[in-house]
Structures are given as C-alpha cells and as structure tokens.
Amino acid sequence: MKAGIHPDYREVVFHDVSIDFKFITRSTVQTREKIEFEGAEYPLVKIEVSSESHPFYTGKHKIVDTAGRVDKFRKKFGTVGSKTSVAE
Image (tube, rainbow, N blue to C red):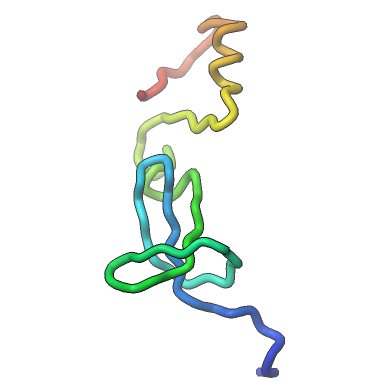
C-alpha cells in the first residue's frame, strides 16, 4: 500500500440518539466531537437510526421525524386511509 493516500481507519463510537444506544466500530468517518466511552476517548458520530432502533430489526413500527412533518401531515389529513398503527 502507498503511504499517505488512505484515510485514517480507527475505532469510532456511534450514538443512536433516538434510543440513547452507543456502540464501537471501526470507520474512516471524519468527526469533530469526542466522547469518553468504556474508559477511553473515541471520536463520536451521532445517528438517528441503528439496528437497535430500526423497525426491520425491532419488529416495531416507529416514525422518526426530526422536522415535524409527520405531525403537520396528520393535522392536515387526520387518519383517513391509514392502514398502519404507530408505536409510541
């Protein structure tokens, strides 16, 4: 391998902010934040969905809405034509 052309591949903490779940994996993602986790300091990447909160893996239907678009839609249209129930 040529030296100096590859990104820094290191351990990073990913934080699923929707359920406050953290895990360590290796990545080349660039980040400015750091976190103390399990006695060591790691770069921190905040994410909204991981395998711990994704409906495919959990079996629960959950809507992730950071901009309030779902509430705005429901106020406008109500539950007309809704075929799914939403987990709180």
